[in-house]
Length: 60
Image 1 (cartoon, rainbow, N blue to C red):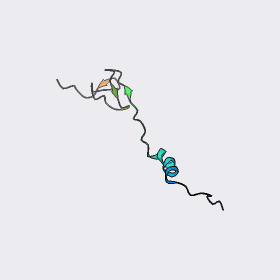
Image 2 (spheres, helix red, strand yellow):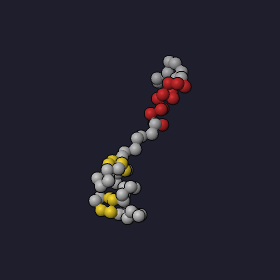
Image 3 (spheres, rainbow, N blue to C red):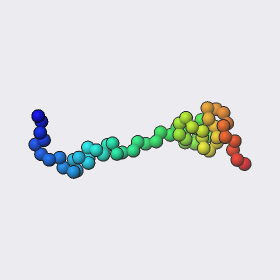
Image 4 (cartoon, rainbow, N blue to C red):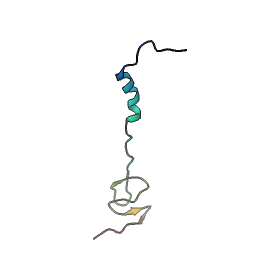
């Protein structure tokens, strides 16, 4: 049976685990109607359009 020759240090252990703790960057796309950045597959918060249609009417 394989046995570690040296004790794994806290630093080495934490470096190995750090990749699972890291957050992924949020994907953002440009709205084709107003060219503002928005989350994909969601209504644009600035103009209210989704898939070429106005879903939420703009408040005047």
